[in-house]
Length: 111
Image 1: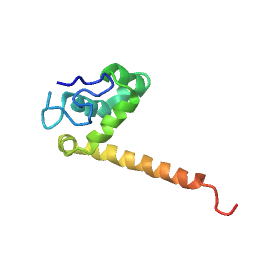
Image 2: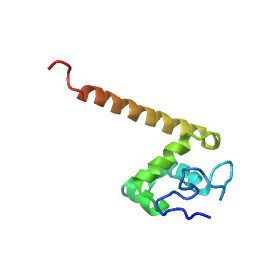
Image 3: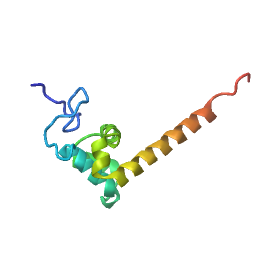
Image 4: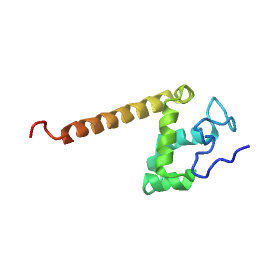
C-alpha cells in the first residue's frame, strides 16, 4: 500500500486518481467539503487562502487543482448543479481574460 504525500488532497492518490475512501454520491468527504466551502467561503473571516490552509491542510495551488478536477466531475454536477455550473462559468471567464491579455501582450509583428 503506497503512502499518499502530505501535499496530496485527501481522497486523491499520488497519480491523481481518486480513492474510494469516504465515497458518498460519488464524491469523497474532501470533495463534498470543497463544494460546501465554495458555496460560502466569504463567510470565513480573512483571506480565502488562509481558510483553505486551515480547513483543508493544503496549499491554495493544490486546492484549486482539486477544485478544477472536481467541477469537471459528473458526480459534483449531480450533487450541486447550480454551484458547479457557476464555478465552470467563472473559470471560463478567467481563462478568456488570460487569453485576451496574452494576445494584447504579444509584440506587434514587423516592429
